Amino acid sequence: MSTNAVSSSSHFFGEIDYLYLSDIKIPYHNLRNPGTVAIDEMVDSIIQHGLLNPIIVRTKDDNYFEIVAGYRRYLACKSLKWKKIPCHIVNLNDMQTFEVSLVENIKRKSLTPIEEANAFKMYVSDKGWGGIAELSIKIGKSSSYITRHIALLNLPNDILEKIRNKNLNPSVAEELLSIKDHDRQSYLGDLIHKRHLTVKRAREMIKEDPLYCENSEIIEIRKDLQIFNKSIIALRVALNRLGEIIEEVEVEGVSEKNKDGNFLIQELIRYHSKCLHNQIDNLLKSKKKYARDIVRYRKILDN
Image 1 (cartoon, helix red, strand yellow):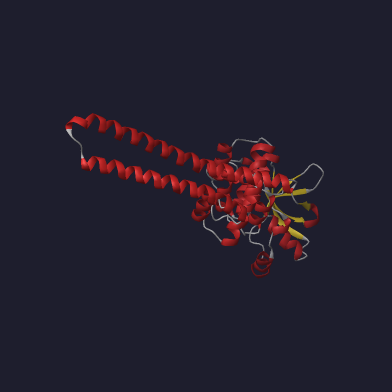
Image 2: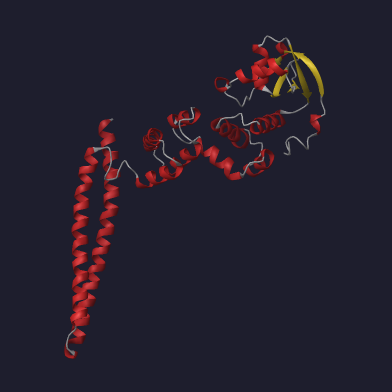
């Protein structure tokens, strides 16, 4: 391991010994969710080749040993009814134990994205053992990687559950963070999951905002937005006609005597064309705002 948490630590000068499994306990800050730990392959490997690497443990004040790294190996040996297991006994404090366990699990890619996120949050925020930049150096991951993972914990529980169950890619789920409303995050996350969308397509869909667009699954929204669309089309037709009139005047030309008057008329028409442009932009903004407000209003009525 090439991290400060491990390679530069003199605390790893411990001793190897066989310990009773009954004297070993799982760590208080266990990084793994017991429900997600699969040990079948590990059990088969131990049956065929034995336990190739000892687990790392540390001594505790009340005369027992706590696992630092090797939780899955411990569970596999326990399921095989072993009485003793080879252990590398080290002297570490709580922070060092957490760092070693985190590095070991990241190296083996044994943590789920949510388990990683919770571990990063615990180190940086809950325990205050160090900042994101410091943790980045210790575990060999970029600061943005750590920040993005911690941000995932702000998503609704149903989205986090989809990530845990591998029904939603964490990179895709990150796109939902641009939306602040949890109900909308859940709604869009469900659509992304059902349609098996890529990161790029999910980003496009979120930008399009399917809850409020012309293709919304809410019929009332589609009907309301059509009124805006008809108005916008009418203004665009008028804008296009004004443009044609300006071109006609320029092509036909006028006498030198009326040249100044013709110029003033063209500028006046261009001014009103610009006003139509602004009106179209305002209608587009109003359409989006109306859709969002009416959805909120309907939610209040439903509740």
